[in-house]
Length: 284
Image (cartoon, rainbow, N blue to C red):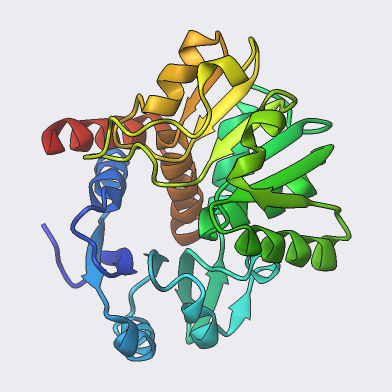
């Protein structure tokens, strides 16, 4: 039962009908018997500033921020966490006694998912795509000690821009280019991260950007798409005896870090993952 004492969290973005975050977080609150609730707040871009001020005024504890607001919302943040400042994107807001704080938990979510199966330090990483998710992963893996990072994008100019930004801010030399470099780049990579929507439901029969013959045994292949859980890229990884990692992990781990920021408590990760899987089954 929601009362005047219930603490409110949520997510802002547009559209939000696809989001599984409400199901994930509300399951976590129930499992810990917490009087909290997580609500989707669809917010159009032109109303972003008013929405942030309104949420703070209404004593909302915090919200996640998703497409298309992750960069634009920085304008309305009072205190920007170091990682969010480096990346130039915010996916978590905390409202605290009149102060709006901005964080990026995508970055740690990406790293945590990978380090469940391998060590990033001294690893060669190939990142496909140059959008917000690629940005979060690339910055975090550079900080974690990757030996090299190559960013390839359908539009090479975007990859060059991201690589230059990382080099300027971290002094880390990142290579970049177009998809034509995939065949020669993939075979030498220890970790491949696909941040593109290739293979996302309902386009589950798309051709993978990297196929099994370009992979090798023990390579870690991480697809940030989580619907379906077993994407076309991960099926290719299985053929090559590579190590498949689902984007489901990043969704859960970034959410778990947001949960900790808002509540000060350790998130029930297993409960959150189960809730997301249940949500995916229902969508099917």
